[in-house]
Length: 232
Image (cartoon, helix red, strand yellow):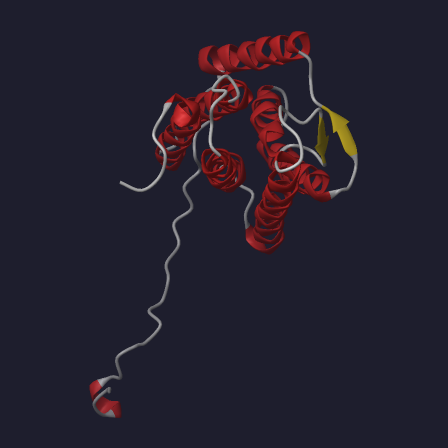
């Protein structure tokens, strides 16, 4: 089989599986489960790099494969998945569609640029990079659960606008060129505790449901009536 199969990519695949399952739950209106899946994906992503670096005898191809597979999974987990949640929560219309598209494009640009930088860096030095260039895409796994807590205290209409603003701001920070120091283990633990608390609150108290808006869509090609002759 093609690819590399060892424990160094296991968490990356678990993260992807959580997000794909979360998408199915979001489509069915189970947003509490979807938010939990997003948080779990972010948790897996926090530690997949640390686990991968424990294997000291990785070949060059294994390292490059890890870089590519991590970014490909991140596109789904922290690009498409949060955008889908926001769409289902009401970020729609022309403005909403444009912002969702913008967020996803920024996600791809950020990850593509990361692949270039990380590939070049690993050819020159070993170990982990100590800085991010731009906001890491996994930030959305922290931001969205915290933003979701606002649905307890504001109206649905305002909540949708806040979701739209979140996509716009976070997406822009993905591609802004600034250096951000990677968090220490203590800060990571604090972030995990913060998001974990938010997830528990959402699980216990959230009652958010999809507002399904029926859409009657006309066919692209309509059959001509009998009086107008046969349709081709």
